[in-house]
Length: 403
Image 1 (cartoon, rainbow, N blue to C red):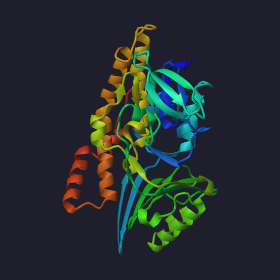
Image 2: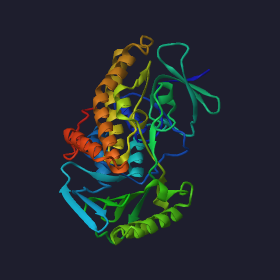
Image 3: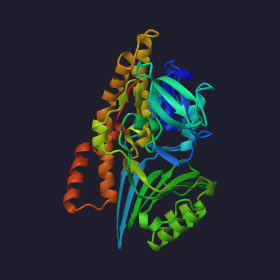
C-alpha cells in the first residue's frame, strides 16, 4: 500500500521550505521530501531585496533574519579595462541585505512541525495516480511509494523529477565557474556597507558586507581559466583564483578578502542554470494537481539577484489559492480538474507575467555580461533593460501580497 499524503513538496531548499511554511501558516499540513540527509545550507551568501523581504514578512521570519544582516546602502560598480578604470556609485533605494544561506534555511525550517521534513528521500519517478483525481504517485529509490493529492516540485533547476513529469524541457546551462565564500574580520572589516561589483578582464567579482565582522564574496571566472577545477580541493581552487586575479592586477582589497576566506565556507559551482524567458512565458506548469515552484519553474542566472526572492514569492502566492481550495472542497469531492486544479491555475496565472519579465531581464543581463554581444545586439539589450526599469531596480519593488 502506498503511503498517502495531502500535499507533498519535493525539495527542501529555500522554495520548498518556504512553501511548507506558508501552508503551515495557513493551517495546512504538508510533507517535504529532501534527498540530502540534513538541511542543505551550502552556497555561502544570498542577496535578498525588498520583494524578498516582503515575502519573508508574510512567512513570519523577517524580523529574526534582519538581526543577522545589516543594510547594504549603496552599489559600487568598478570596470577595469587595461589601463582604464571607470567607477559608478549610487544608493540602494530598496531594502537589500546579504544573508548567510544557512541562517535563511534554518529560519524557514524551525517553525515547521517536527515530522514535516523527511530526509534521505531520493525520488526515482513520478507517475499519474491510476485512481485519477489528478493525484500523483512518487516512487522512491528504495522502491517505496507515496501518493500525493497535490504535488509541488521545488526540486531545483537541474534534474527536477517533477518538471520532467510535467514535460518541461531541461534547463539550459552557461559554463561560468563561480567561487563563493565568507571572510571574517574579528575586529571589524574596513569596508562600507556596499555591494561592490568589479569587472577585471573576463572576471566578475562581487563583495557584500553582511555584518560589521563578516563579508561575502564571489568570483565568476571565464570557463577556460577554470578548466579542471571541478572536484578539486577548494583550497587549491582558491589559490588558483588568487593567482588569476593577481595576474589581472585585481585590487589588493579584493584579493585579500579571497585570501582570508574561511576554507570551510568555500563553495564552487561550475555553471549557471536558467530557463529561457520564452519557456517561462509559455511553459505548461500544471498537470492535474501537480505543479512546480522556484528554480524548477524559473531557474535564472544570478545576474539580477532574484532567484531566491522569486522562490519566496512563489511560496506565498501558491499557498493562498491552495488554502482557499482546502476550505472550499469537501472530502472526496475534488480532483485535479476541480477546486485544487483551479487553485494551481490561479497560482500560475498570477506568477507567469512576473516570472517571465524577471527571466527576460536576467537573460538579457547574462547576454551583456557573459556573451560579448555585437554593438547592435548590445544596443537592443540596453533598450529592453530600460523598458524593464532595470536601472531603477523595478523588479525589487514588487509586492507579492499578503499570505
